[in-house]
Image 1 (tube, rainbow, N blue to C red):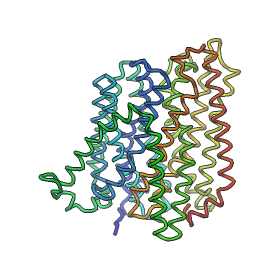
Image 2: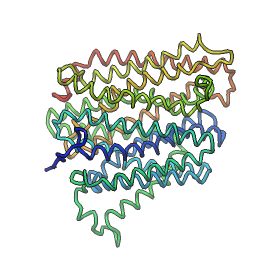
Image 3: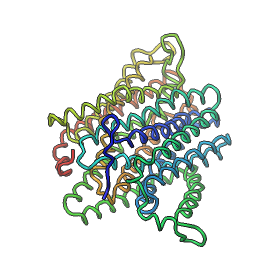
Image 4: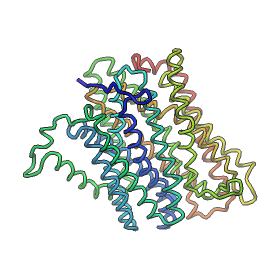
Length: 492
């Protein structure tokens, strides 16, 4: 029996505040590293765009694949709290390993971050859901507030980590990211009393009992986690196998979910089916959205006039700032909006929100078409083009991402909570791998050496196609949303 914290802060359980700031610092760490990665690969190691995109896609795919395992280990062995702390420690170690300033140390550090994220990401989102009773109407609002924390961390990462890395040296940026993760770990540890009652290991006695010679189950788990880092190192280098690995992982997880659904009766079966369908739409959305850290960053570097009113020039990595800025600006408004619409019984169903989000994403890409007419003599488009892209992408994100997190906690029975969250993040893994492949369509400028005019034309053509695909799929999803919603059996 789960007990709930009845004491509140600003209308929500007090644990939400701790998780908000913990996630903020973790995202400061992750997005700081992500914002610098492609620039680090292309400028410090002189890698071509295609190779850098492949490394970026492999890394981000593995980052989101890892929660499938991390969620399972938390459900069966560690519990949410210990898994989150272990994950935070590994992520900080990973950032500091990158300071070795070589490709070898970079990939080893990335491996540690992947393992750490696997423990951290699925479990902290699950923990947010556990703060609320299943029928609590504040749940969507709570996840949207939590999502603001995600983007506050991303905002600080682009303003501080990316700027420091580009201006003073990449190693200083990565070091700051690691320090940020330690701040998050400290906050989580200090405030764990507010959610300890819902985050303990499933079997504390077994966790601390010896299972392999002198080693306890906890110690064995930690040792195996560190031993996974060399494996990930080779997967990052030989990244072509990740697509095959993802395909088999998707098939296996889909089989497990349907099997558990059938075992649980018709309602759970239908909910697992709609979950898988929405995961597929989620893959397409984020494959297009996640150009931010790869092709859109190089687009900003090569084809955007980043001068701000003649006062200063933004770095290419800093243009990623607009996404978290708009999230913070509008996130609280959406939090209130969903609550008000629910009160009036006008809240769109979850599949429809996915469709609207896809349409908005597509509109963002279609804005690049104006670049044909408004570029300067150097074939640089004005800053408002990329601001417009990020604005519509952000509004689309608010229709999908926090709603998706909330949806997972509603669909999942307690015994499957972290596992289903891990499966949700697996869809992000597929989208990030696909994003790396799609980014290659923008052309390998460092090898082909196109002119500024040719480079801009290539970006506009590819992004216009992205936009048309997203709008078309979004309209289709909105049209069929009533039928999809029936599979949710009352969940909104």
